[in-house]
Length: 146
Image 1 (tube, rainbow, N blue to C red):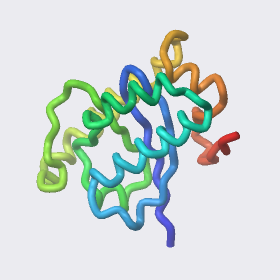
Image 2: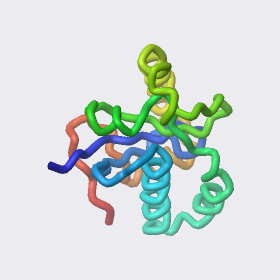
Image 3: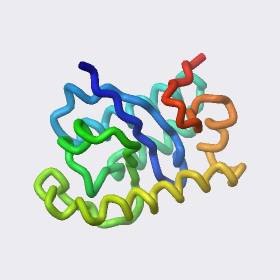
């Protein structure tokens, strides 16, 4: 059985970018983050956003997930957020016991960031949303790339 999860980038430049990935073969959070960033790169390349690709290359190493383990991603069907904020990066693979209480507050703060981005028309993620790459609906359908 394929396990598909929704991942949303929460950051100043690419906040709101959403992708659905099959997570069965991932062994850790780092692989998940890498796969989401790779999908973003593919999207930017397919639309010839070279300057945005340059920006992404400069900040790729900052993307991370916290307050979640790979086991939780495999078991719990909900949106997961990937950020590159100045937050403290924790080793979530080994701190699973700490994550239960703070996961809901972290998700709430990331959700508010990613949903407010679309109001900024100078933001690159707004440009991407306007060309129909992002799936702002919660109907679990993926929008195909052109």
